Image 1 (tube, rainbow, N blue to C red):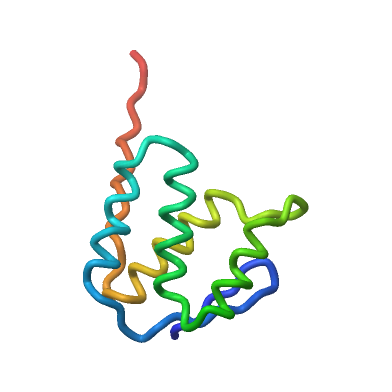
Image 2 (cartoon, rainbow, N blue to C red):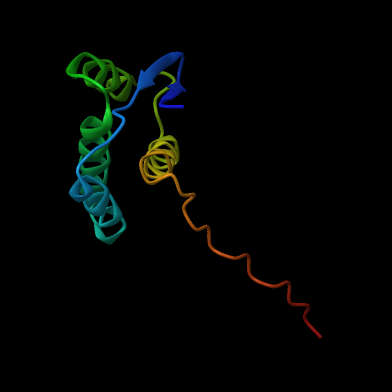
Length: 102
């Protein structure tokens, strides 16, 4: 499946993108400034959406102040996009073992 839905809008992604697109997405976690992170995620999503019209709809959703796309939403979409492009689930960190105070 190459579609995702967020805030009532459905988006389709490209079947394949250049490996650099995925590689650049992996560098997002190295960014420190929130504006840089948001811009990098938006650019990554824009690279994967099927056409400019779709990216325009994405940008309109991102501009909303009421019921906005959150940073958590953006990260969730980004993770799904990487999984969809690589056909492999991303590795989630293992939970820390429960430790009881003595």
